[in-house]
Length: 439
Image (cartoon, helix red, strand yellow):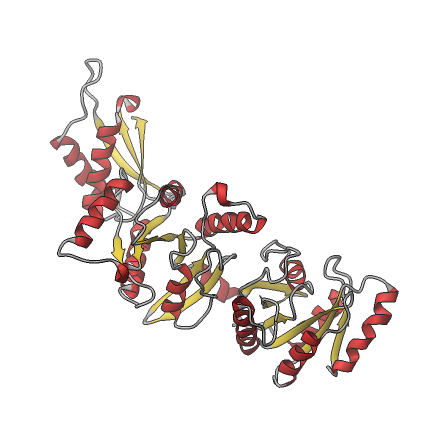
């Protein structure tokens, strides 16, 4: 993997602003609220033809009582472990603080190269004041203004010099983009982060009982047990009326973007709450976007069970999901790690179903027989005749039926044809599109 740089520092020194400048996109949430970046954010930056990973961490607060700040401190230490070099950011505007000191102590113990970066140096007066940071005793020190980008070139040059001749990163990204992408999607607090952590076996996202802990999408490359794919953990999607805070608004957009990137959406429901209108919105959005869907009913360990509980629950769920109910439904517990690997197997099957290409000869053999068995209803005295079927070259399985009166085929018959396709060619979990064209 290519070179990795972590940006660390206390809250509100401008880490995310600098991170966004490096990535030239608004990936991290930037806001004046202290502690907005609660998780590690990953991205790839390039400078002078060298590409490197950048991790933006939450603000470091040593020995704090706040549950988030404790977690952030832990995350920062993990990021420092993961990185090859560290950008330690401080703020010239507020000058040196105790927090900067305690952070410097942590970083001095690390063997990694540290680039002390003094941010918000946007005039000569500030530059003079910023010289107090030399007392922290780091060898590499840079004065920048992240908002305007001034001074960041020298810092990036220093990082680029450290990166050895770029390994086959191009091949690696091509290989990565061919991997299946799974988005874990659902309302706040259904256990998305717990599921991600249970799957990859390390605390990658902050897990707490406060809704909306994960505010950004997080990509994780999974490569265990002969299975390889990308997992995208999203911030919970909330009902629109709840999106008061700007941050929540970002999160909704982020989750929808994650859906766009994904091949398969793992939609997480809370077993005790059942499926809500908002869950149905999420589901229909995924279907509209043509994504593979697996429904995971989480916290199943908390439900009182009788003989047919799961069966009845599944039947009730499918009724709510209709008309598209050909969806795998699994009962899992992220906390107890029950059936979570089964969820991944099913996700991979759905990924394969979505990519399935059926030969025209096979399609016609099967589907024309289905048409023979049950003809389309006669419209205005005309018999509707379907002559030929072919699969269209699209990302979502789409089929064109050529017939004499394409506009006269009604929904019930379309549903019959779709069900026949599903039964014969295993398209479970995948939205199917049918088009009727004039022969």
